[in-house]
Length: 415
Image (tube, rainbow, N blue to C red; front, side, top):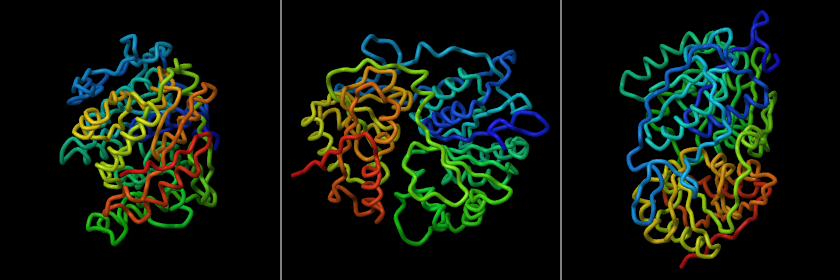
């Protein structure tokens, strides 16, 4: 089946499930590559969810100031002026809807804020967006799953950003779609493909090794079912759309490269400053890296390379960021869009410093031809916490080793 072929001459009905801004960005990249059409431009405008300002959202400066919206140096919001507004419908997918994006909204305020902005961009492209408060209370999952059962059964293709998500795995048990697509969810995509190739159970790389917990055991049948559905056979096709290196390709899985063509077409080129910018990571929040060690590394790296701004990861907590600002002098910026879009829009430093993460793979693609250099600093084994997964060091090294078009920095030597 071609990307746009459906039943009886109708366009394929594609349902995409996203839980993070990067997942939604990569759904837009996938749709752009495959030439999916927008929905009927004559349909009435979709009702937009009321924006919820995240507590303490926006940049956190050295003095603790917290503007609501990140801006460039001219004071203008970081919104691409070249994006055109298109009025589209916002209901369930119909015969005219080639792509409906379902946002399974998380509870984290920063993630929600970025997702709302990305949802606007998806609507600007003419796609339908359905916002689900999937975690808005004890009964929310039942309402969400019940409301999506019909569209899931009618969909010809399912696109998902996180095959490890229990929510997504549960929804996969309902669908009859013959085509399943996994778009990038960062470095987790590398681990997903490897686990699928080896026939292993789906477990996030930073989870500590050992026996599964009670919740894992309770959910094991659903997870096993999802893994089987994500394994290609004569009735089902599976595509992985990724900018990450895929070294172990499961038999029958189609791997399609994401080169961020949509991002480069819609944003930029950026204005480039003479200095350096640093990209934050949530490795402390996930329990992989010690917080004090991380702060020392950021301080020393910024000093060595003259970095002035620190683009925070959406999962970094406010207390950690205030401490970083106070002890390093860096201007802490909380982007309201994925960093690939922020960097492409500019202004951005001539050098971008990062620890091992998704951006060491995606930023060189998004910034191709701009002259911006991406430099990655290795994680020293001494920075890892005692609770870090035994696989953490090898996985993080692999993220750096497989990155292309980046400058590799040795781990910062801490006293």
